[in-house]
Length: 116
Image (cartoon, rainbow, N blue to C red):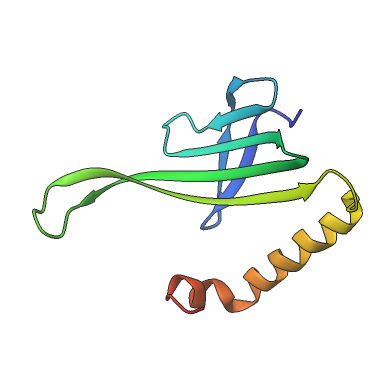
């Protein structure tokens, strides 16, 4: 089980998220103001395991067509999809490290800009 609370840093500001729900294979953490949420879950099916961590942020934004304010949510998540055998934790850790390094080497702006 992950520690309670979980913390992420967004734009140099730490966000503390206490656990708000806990199941046998998932947990949800949320800031007191409910703007940030983290969900960690695990699923098994057809000889595979899927492990996910997802962070969501909610904000109020004006619709550019109507100028009405509405709640909007964006989510960023990582899924590790592994077969029942053949990959150990160290090998998967190397793969995650490689993706994180790729994302932090200036490629996020290109991704958000629609490049492929």
